[in-house]
Length: 277
DNA sequence: CTCCTATCCTGCGAGC
DNA sequence: TGCTCGCAGGATAGGA
Image (cartoon, rainbow, N blue to C red):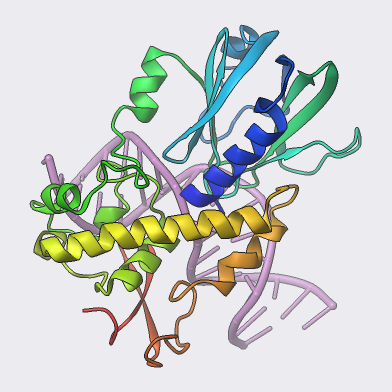
């Protein structure tokens, strides 16, 4: 479930629960039920953070960044990761891998990381991992620096399909497989168009479409998974608002022709032949 | 450089 | 109903 909008919603949920507090939020303990996610969790390094004070929760690309007075750590949800507040002692499910114990205004609470496929990342953030994990990332799509001019410039040498290009984290972060298709539909651009062939006008339209699509999804995500206790609730906007993603063979909501699907660079791509040129 | 494929892992729905 | 197959929202290494 996690593309940028979902990660942003999770971040806001964490903020609401943990950051907007009058008193201090302390991390009392990390509990690793298993440490082999996509990479092995450096359990030892996390010992240093026990007893630290949580200062800030941020998002960079699809990473959550937790800042404490004793160091930083990151969480990436991969394909199937999610965080929830542990509701009771017995609240444990298969594929719960990490538990963080907090002391919030003197009251203890725990947050649980759940991830069936274990493509997620949980890592201590020092100079080395910072460079490794975050060093190569392109601009945030929702910031002003992500402009049509920037996109056009950075795609001038690219022979790959435009859809593949905007999913490249070096070009722009946070655009995953769903919103790539959705944004291209919004912009009226065929996904298979060679990236270097887009015009400046098209680049501008595409940038606007990416921003709009992501913002809309954040809003919808916020309303459907605001408590984010379970991942099941996320189906709300998922199906309801998509114009093309997952709608192969169905009618285009704009022109009525059949939505196409094809595989590009190993990922399913959805588009409308008539609306996208 | 850039591009494409395979790969990590489990769950689920389609189709038989 | 029960089984198998293919596919799933990410990201990277490695070969071409």
